[in-house]
Image 1 (cartoon, helix red, strand yellow):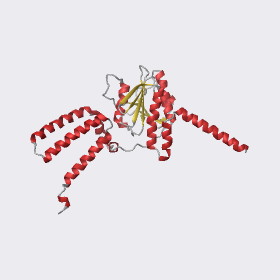
Image 2: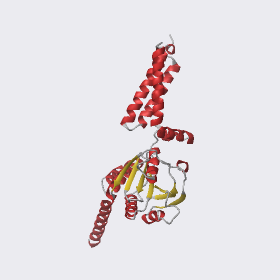
Image 3: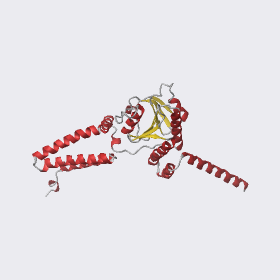
Image 4: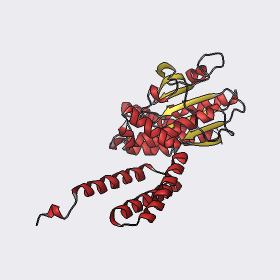
Length: 302
């Protein structure tokens, strides 16, 4: 007898596609509570499908369908940000983000961290509001912002960042986009988050909004009223923080992206830079330079 006679090919493909879609959803969910909700919802959907296909239980089927519909409406309200992000990715054709594409090589050094921390510290002391978006490999595009701002394409420096946030300049109200060791654009208008509207100001809501949509993206916020420092990452805001804490967080986040985007030969160096401060790297470079100079002098004498 034909083997395919025992197997419904259409049913097999249906189950395989459903399992693949479920695994994709589970791989993209990181929060434990959200994972529980997703498991419960998929269990109800699977139960409804099984009863409708293999059991003639019309009343039970109707009840489960009603529960699934109610859960769908509830999840649509709870996950409105994630669903909006999904439709944006589908509309722009960026399916690789949904499939968990590996991050592109992210080039940044300890100097980048030092400049960002120095800038935030000086702006905080002067109580000058600022919003710095650091792209860690999300491949941000102009259509991801409400307004893409003015193209800068300049080397990252503390003085330039401070000047961009000067109150008498037309770009100080927007955000500055930084990628690697470069300032990409300034005066960028970010989408606002809907969480914590009563607690946070516009800058903090903008930082939450962009980090909710992009996992590999962080925001440094300096409050204009109090001068406090904050860091937004994956839709969560840590505030208030000190300059040393900001440097620690940046070293951890940027160091992780460097280790993911570089070759195997540089993985050990990047992991070492995560556990050391930029000042330690500078001290190490000075010691190596002195050692090389003393070794050259000894060779000349010999």
